[in-house]
Each structure stands twice: as structure tokens, then as C-alpha cells.
Length: 317
Image (cartoon, rainbow, N blue to C red):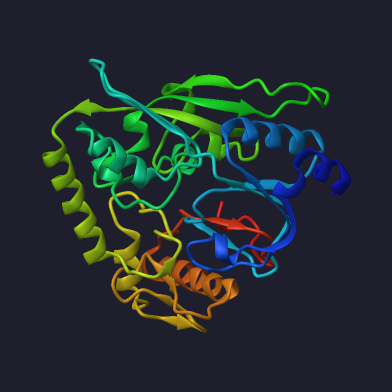
């Protein structure tokens, strides 16, 4: 990496050889060559533009859920997205909320709820960021980002010369080409960055909205394990549920080292305290192999694998 140029551009916001486990919800992962903190969408755009222009290997990390970082870490720069500004437009016929991509989706849902704005009840308790949700079309309880998104501010990769000003665009929801847990951005990985998103809301009463959110949060706590995990491991196959298939395959509670397929919900793999990423990866392979053998169904990952995995190939694409 061109360390001198990066240090000149970002100063103390750039740290070298930083372990990533503390920045992931599963508390797993080796060190990144560089970790860059950004606190505004403008900083994020400038960082993305420079990293692209330098031809560096880099990724964005938000809340650290839905990712499994290799024990070997990440050879490149991890941009830690702390751009969290939220603007609520409530005094209009069609209310909405603008949120920078590093804002926590569940917290944004609570912020609008206390103002009597409905539409994000489904997001109660979701640990991911707005940016991650826009890219992956996050959803729960019958709702998803595709149903709320109005527009997103997107910065695309450019081959233009360095030192230019980043030039983001406003994309309407149709341009994201959403499908179940995926989008155009996810399918074209590394070619664009979400800076901000506007989500459609509706007028309601704080009491009714918060009651619904509390009901959904309570359900989440009853049905999903606490502690260090990545969230849902696999996408649900058409007409079925990944957790049901893994449980029916006899793998609920299965352990490798200190990693375990949850005894509460088999589509959650938990770190019991001293797990390694390779332990979780071994459980992933076991679950996919066993479900395929017993039911003829190929489970596809909902999480993202980050870093080097010796035998990954294209088996999870």
C-alpha cells in the first residue's frame, strides 16, 4: 500500500495492523493491514475515492454484523463507517428519514417511532447499518428496505484522475434492482458505496408504533440467541427455512471448538467465548454439506466472508 499517501490524507484516522474482532458482532477475525475511521458521508466519499484511485484492496465495515472475518485478517484497508447523521422530515404529508450509511438501522427505527412515524417497526432490534441494509436488502417480519427506500445517495467507482472531487448520484429505489437479500450493489461488489438513504414513513401514534416494536423485539429475543453471532447465517431457500433444514439435519447444538450452531435457532452460529473464525467456517461447510446430502438443497450464505479462506472457491457464490 502507498502508506505515505494514505497517512498524509487521513492522519491519525488511519491505524495500521488492527485486529478486527472487536469491530465484529461475532467477536472474530484477524488484523487488517489498515483501519480507517470516517465520521461523515463526505469523509466516506473522499476515502472511497482515494482508495479506488490508489488501486487498493478495501472494504467498508459498519456494525460488524453479517460478516465473518478470517483468522488471517484482511490484506488491505477496512473503512470503519461511523457516518451516523439522521434527519427526520416529519411535518409533511409523506414523512421520511434521511440517514447516513453508518447509522444503526434499529436505532433509526426507534428514533422515528418516538416521533409517531411508522414504517420501520420491522427493523426493531436489527443490529446492522443503513448502508449494509441498503446493499443487502435487509428485512424481517414481512418488511424490508426495498419496501421503504425512496432514494439512496451512491458514489460509484471512477477511473478518473486523482485529486478530483467525489461526484455522488441520487438513485431511485428501482435502480437498486432489489431481490431477496440482494441488490444491484451487492451483485456488483466493490463498484459503489452507499453514502445516505431516504426511507419512506407514515404518520401514526408513538404509543401504537412502540408497542408493535416492543412486541417484535420481544419475539426476536425469544427466538434468537443472545451473545456473539453474525445474525442469520444462510438465506432461506424458496418455500422453506434454513434453520428448519439445519435442525432437521440433526445439527442443532453441533460444536466445533467454541463455535456452536445455536440450540435456540439453528440458522444462528454463536461464538461461545474462544471460537476461531475457522471453527465457524467448518460448521458452515458441515451444515451446507449435510443439508445438501439429506434434502438436496444448497444453502446460500446470507453473511459475507471477509479475508482469505483456503478452500472457498466459488462454493458460496
